[in-house]
Length: 345
Image (tube, rainbow, N blue to C red; front, side):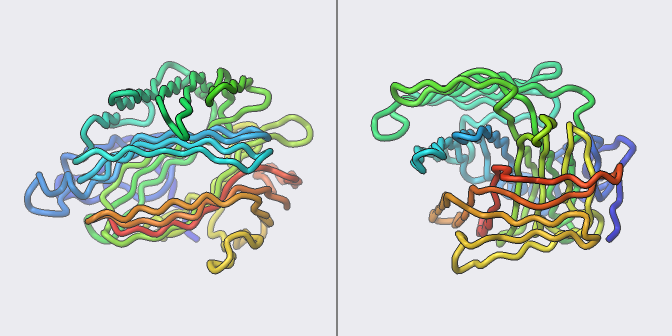
């Protein structure tokens, strides 16, 4: 497959609403400029087609915590969830706001803050030099229990990541930045329990997405952040369905923050039974993984204009990956997720 790497800076969209460059980069090279979206002749209607989100996921061997601020154009969705892998219990809640009211999201994944505040709820994602700060305070989050978090996520300058500028037809697009394996310190409290995190056992993933999507969409996304037996970090980012992937896929893996880029990766699973093992095979055979789920998180939204169904499976990856250096990496019991997402939005 063609893997077009973007290496020079530019704006994302030209004056007629087309991507100036298509492909991937290892850090943000294109400046998001939504004022140039030209899906509809009227600018006000273009805002309604925008889908923007900041999603953070924190992985440990015992639990997973996630918080998201998103603006889907005609509604805002703010949600968080906590999964205890030891008991398979999950706490989750979501707030919907008309036209994204109260959802403040930055134009860049590298500068600016995301903030949402409503009575009893405050979520902030703060960007500082070489780190990100995630704070959550949500009263009566689930079964009358509060949830809160105060997390410091390290992102050194040399830490590589995947950035995609992907066309969807002529005037639609998806621009996203995904970062794996960011060491995380701090704490999460849920009810009377408090969980302390350190960079030696807790890693964060960021999914920063901005796009003008077609109404009907489908994708698979698989991700993991963890540690090898020798203590090095290992991360996975695999997916398909995110638009026209002829220019590049987002498939890659990381060893100690250094990316190995992959081309096409076949994703095989049973859509009638998501708990059955999934298989991931790259076209050059440099990646072969079996993912065995142990927990299914199902999310369904059925509103007037927005219908979505997501099956996010948490489980363990086992297999091999061959790095750019030629080293064959054995991946064993790596906790992560794989999902199928369908939406009309």
